[in-house]
Image 1 (cartoon, rainbow, N blue to C red):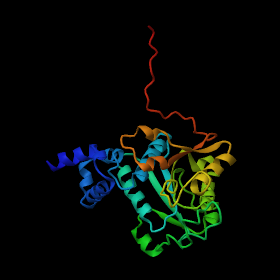
Image 2 (cartoon, rainbow, N blue to C red):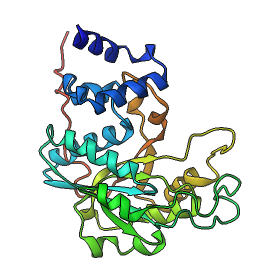
Image 3 (cartoon, helix red, strand yellow):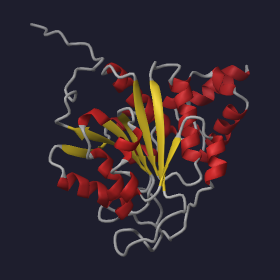
Image 4 (cartoon, one colour):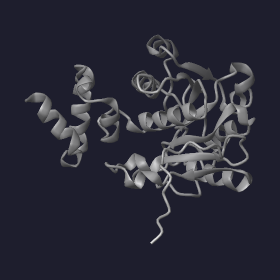
Length: 282
């Protein structure tokens, strides 16, 4: 009876408010009741914590597997307390049961909190120096897979590939708040094609908010995306439009983008699972 009721609720998520849904998801995880509902179903209906992580990683893993890769890297820019990395590791544990692929996870952060914002596009009216400082020692005790890349992103991003020799990047999660920091983070795509999947799932945390933030295309992370597209002819970061037909529409759907490297050697490798349509002659 309980299982039948739980499944019914999972398939009708629109009937629940976000606080109630969040509470029930926490219960599912706390008491391991998630085993009662397969991960893919829970992911499709947002019955997981931070579904934007799970969605992006799962889709990137399937793409990488189709392209013949044995492992991929997941990047998070802006770690703060580390809850994001911890959640990423939880999703990876579930996804590895479905897709036979290995993962590397890297978290970029200064460790000391936000730097001093610059005037103009960094939204200094909302963000302040020192926000989101990290307790490195406490966080490292909780991490099982992730590696911290500490320091100013202006210094750590250009040397990342030579320092860590990571698997090709499949996902990039950006939570840097500032225009200036996001500009530096997007330099991760200015690398050899071998370091990237031809299409990379991207999540930008600071592009939707309240009247306090008033996010727009001319400041913050959105402005950094536009600058990247203006200065790269054969590489673009685009809004992900396929989520429009997702079973459950949520705000995070508007925060998912995809990076495209049009000159990537594997960009046009066929990976579609759509059956060819026969031509019917009448």
